[in-house]
Amino acid sequence: MSDSRVTIVALPTFTRNIRTLKKKYRNILEDLQPILDRLESGETPGDRIPDLGYPVFKVRVRNTDIQKGKSGGYRLIYYLKTTTSILLLTLYTKSDRDDVAAADLQDIIEDYDRS
Image (cartoon, rainbow, N blue to C red; front, side, top):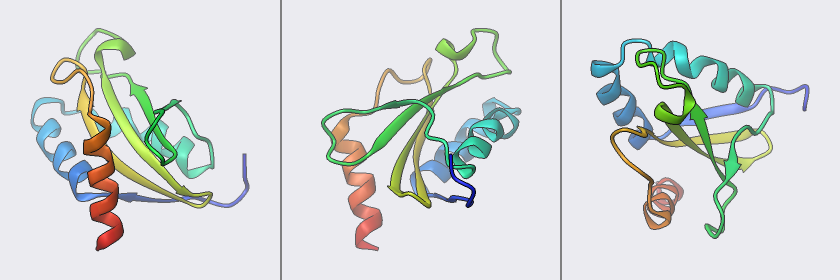
């Protein structure tokens, strides 16, 4: 764990996902805050997604609007760009989507790098 704060940037895809999910799940921002706090403090929660070529992690987040625990909750995917910079790539609910394809994640990262 580091003493310096980590900069977190929400990419457009993530922002769109939040806006869409907020219509259905009113507590989404409160549910995400503990994970965002951990990321800001330098922790890297979740499991690394293999075979991407980037340090990308997927974290399960409990959805307090439904009673299914973490397994039926949100999936937050982020990219550890540097030790002090994290990009929030995408967010989805397990009930809406099984997984995000590695190619989709690479496209999101490459679009950001080009801009």
